[in-house]
Length: 40
Image (cartoon, rainbow, N blue to C red; front, side):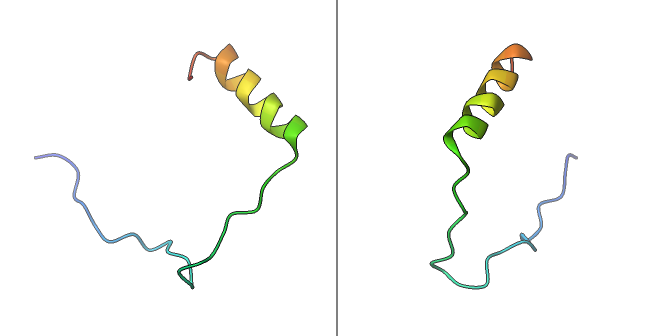
């Protein structure tokens, strides 16, 4: 049994689509939170 694997429906519209980069302080805050909850 297990989970069924399906095609990803959340694909980018073009092949060269990029994710926007967030500010450095926000990335640091997210990293600190993940470390606090022992997820990293």
